[in-house]
Image (tube, rainbow, N blue to C red; front, side, top):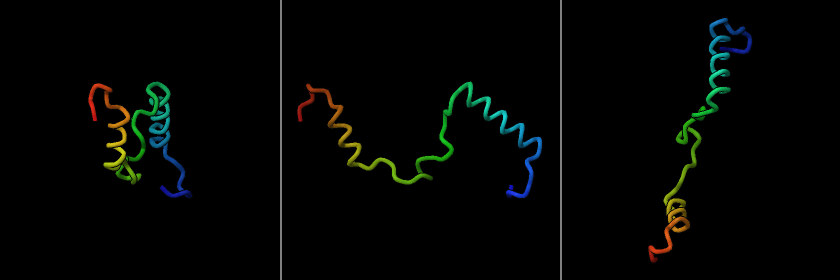
Length: 60
């Protein structure tokens, strides 16, 4: 839809429905996936997380 086009009643209903669902359930899923946003966790981040959260009885 371009800026010059006015939304149709069906579009208004869909927007209102999404707004009501977000009010009730919150924003459960992001609009974009992590793949679309780029970045993401690298192997180093996972290793650091593991070291920070490793139980003390697991020597290392």
